[in-house]
Each structure stands twice: as structure tokens, then as C-alpha cells.
Image (cartoon, rainbow, N blue to C red; front, side, top):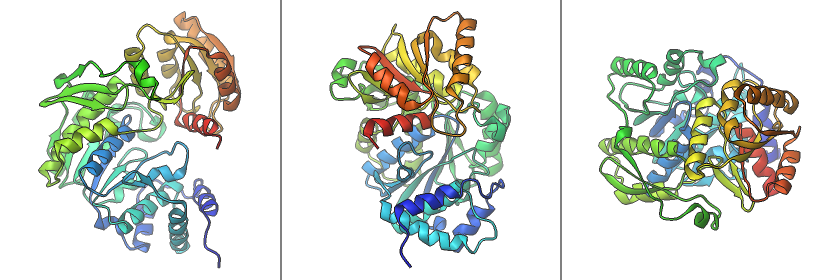
Length: 441
């Protein structure tokens, strides 16, 4: 029998998406048992939250790698290729390794009465891979919620991190902050340290209660101890290198730090990371200040105010809920004060669009409305009607151009942008499609 190819592995993994959707951890645990329970032999930093999970995970994993630890990183969703979700020390899982593990786990799935979902299968594959590569520590990002997310099959992590809370996936997690925070707090287990972003009193009350029940201490960053400093180069100087300027800031007793991720919200995420690093040190991790500084100044995370073309300047940002959109707009205002932008906007139909769209319209000179190639995406024509309606309500003056497909929107904006700043927003799926088109993939 021929070994499974990478293409066949991807076909198999994506084919699991619509199968077996019962809420719970049973299928993940069953598949882990069938492949030898690799999760029991690893140490973890488990991350849940609404916004900032990926950036926080990227900063933590980069710092740990610079400190000399073999660090596994599991994130979702991917932007361009599935392999991005599973990496060790910045190296994505190779095609042949992913195919081999898929073939091995597919044989285990055959023994199950009910197959796992795509995410459940991917989580087990990642944990098996990290165990095989003898990772010292794994930074594990929850996919959706926390309590019933398939990543929550792990033993008590060294640190549980809960990033900024907001309203997303409300049909699944609940429409109130108490319900959302309860789902996220489900990753907190006895024996772990806990760090929470804060700034959400109702959510904080839920998390504090969970910590009390589990006997955990709770640490929150003090954002009043976060101060910004002038960057070492201008936006124009940085763009010549194809990036945005590094942010410079101080937090508590750490002075003059550089951060290669853009936006005020990333400095807050960095403060959360610094608190987590201190908790890791208290748990026996040896992390030098040099590793901390180098890790923050060299971290990269896709589709977070990422420069994908210059000139014209095209920025891609995966903001897909109101809190994320607000943070993106604050970041743009900070870097480009008093500027108006050209937006390429596409989004999933199940998002809070009536709250997202008004956040960028006041800064919009022109909006190319499009639809990512996803069944869940809102059709461009329908989305454009909503944008025009909300612009009229706000008395915003913008030009709206309907481009049913992303390729058409990207082609037009590249021809027509001139010296304008183009920001591609609304969906991580849109971000991935744009990056694929620009790379010729």
C-alpha cells in the first residue's frame, strides 16, 4: 500500500470537518488514547480568550525559543497553509511529516465508533508531533471557547493565559459576558498559575471565582505601568525595509523594550506576556532578560497590520469582531494620524457586522466590498448594501465599489491606489486569500 501524500492528507483532514459535531472532549480523548496519550508527556502554556490569542502565543513561543527551549506552537486558523498551525522553533511541520502522522492517526480513527472533527484530529496530530520531537514546552492556543475546546484535554498547564475578552462566536459561547468568560475560564485547572488580560469586570469576576474553586492565584497586568516611547525610526524609514516601525515601550521595571508587532493593543498583549514570563520563572523556567528583549523585538505574526506590498502600501489585518476592529483602527490612527484609508472589506455573515462596519467607515475614503471564497462569507452585494446603509446612518462620505471576488478587488485596488494606504480587513480568510493571490499560489 502506498503511503499517504500531503495532498491526500489535506483531503482527509478537511473531509472530517462536517462529521461528528457533538460538543465535548470525548472524541479527542479517545483518539489520544488510541495513539498512546502523547499529551501526558509535555508541559504547556494554554491560551484562551477572544482577541490577541495568536499574537500572545507568538510572543511567548519566540521568547521561550530565544531562552533555549524547544518550543511547540499550536494555533488556528491558518492563513495560507495548514502547516502553519503546527510548528517547533519557528519551523512549520513538513509536508511529509504531516502526511505520515495523518496516515498513522487515520488508522486510529478507523477504530472509533464516531470520527473526530477536523479540529479535534488536528489537535491530536499536533500533540503527537510535539511529543515525537521532544518539545520542552508547548504553547497551545484554544480554538473556540475553552472548556469544551479540544485543546482542553491536556493535564494542568504551567500557566493558563486568558487574553482580552469580547463578543464573538456568541451563538456557541453565549450572548452574555458571564457565559463567554465561563467558557474561556474552563481552561483553568488546579495546579496552574493563571494570568488574565483584564479590562472586563464581569469576565474578571467569573475568572476569579474559577481560580478560587481551583485554588489558583490570579495575576493581571497593570496597564497604568505601560508607557510608550518614541520609535527609533519613522514609518517611511521602516517601509523601505518592507515593515512597519518597531514600537518602543516600558513596562514596570523593564525599560526601553522594542516590539515588532504594530498597534497599541500589541503593547498591552506584550504586558500580558511579560507577566506570564514572570510566572514561568517562578515555576522554574530559566528565561534571561536578553531572551525576553530579543523575543519581543523579533516576533512576527501574520495578518496583524502586516505589510504585504509597498508601494502601494497594502496592509493586511485579520480583525473579524468589534473589539478587534476597534484595536486595528486605533493602531492605524497611531501610525497614520489624520489620514483616511482605502479599505478592502469582506467578512463572514455570522459576525457582528452592524458593530464592526461603523468602526472603520469614518476613516474610509473608498471601500472595495468583496467576499472571501468561503461558504460562510456574506455575498459582496449584500455586504455593500449594509455598508451603504450604515454610512448613511453615520453621515459618512465614502465611495463603495462592489467586487464579488477577492481577485477582482485586489486587482482594482492595486491599479487605483496610487499613494493611498490600503487596508485589507474583516476576516482571516480574506487575509489568507489575499496573501495567496499576492504570492501567486
